[in-house]
Length: 420
Image (cartoon, rainbow, N blue to C red; front, side, top):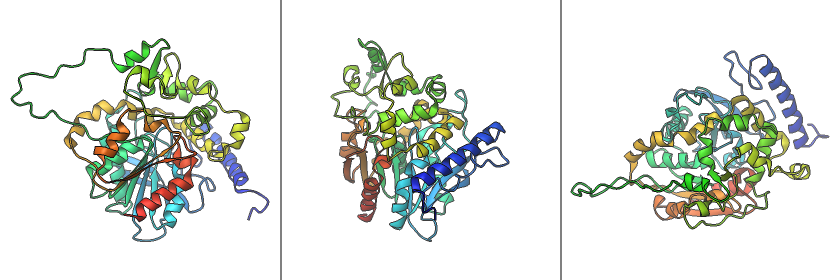
């Protein structure tokens, strides 16, 4: 079938046809490639996913209609593997590791998480329901999906980028359900602490009166700002969604700049969380004060030759991301960054708890994510995870390790699961 057409050409043809359908739907007020009567995007068009991976919806998951990619669904009694993406990604980021995991005997499922893609039921207003994006509620989303798919537990939960702390909190809160955990690109430094032995101490801790890290960054000779602070601002979504270069070019530059394809990604351990040390990181983490993220990544747009040579995210596959984020915007994902303080108090319920299940850490050798929080990698290995089976820095990968090196990532996960 299609003997005169390569898989890549077929994918590009199908994606173009789907994008034409999306444009028609958007003009008629029906977003998505196959919108239904409730004005919600439908499942992915045939041909967008590897053979053996399907796109479906699961209703009633903590108030969400959750879009899920699924592999290994044909057999019964398969152990589950839950895959959680980060920012700015989708369940689609796991497409090339799902089939190998399914072939290894697992039921593999990856949702568009709250705030992303074709999952609906979340508030996209900057002034809307921010509390629903706090970490423990997103853990509730993950737990609800596991149960909705008929599992009482899963063999492992895997989280990449912002999905990594969610996977870690899944393991902390419900070790009976999440029997092991794989953290990717973002180390988990542990649960919060509570003051101890203070009952008979009349002195009170004194709050720091010095300038904050953010003030120190702004005061540098070359004024800077932390990307997470930028992501909390009202203008961040508009800046990225309506990037002057267009959202497709914006995402192309964003993914390129944080990948191993950008030669400047040569990460190392930082000495401390100080402005001068943090400013050693690339501008996608420590931005120039006057720039938005659109302007930041535009300075590192790959050439046409580099784009054509990209085998891990060709233009047809990038278009899945650009069309989805053009439709939904980025505010849902940005709300994860804004909700940290809202959920901080309830996280103290788990003060002192560790991840005692088997765990693994996987990151790209060219990924600054492993070092962007000084000391976090060491705390994860030394105290937060008591049964760490390995920390792997994959050559030829930057931040998007499961996309840049899917074969190696899949092999590490399968070996980890096989040894349990």
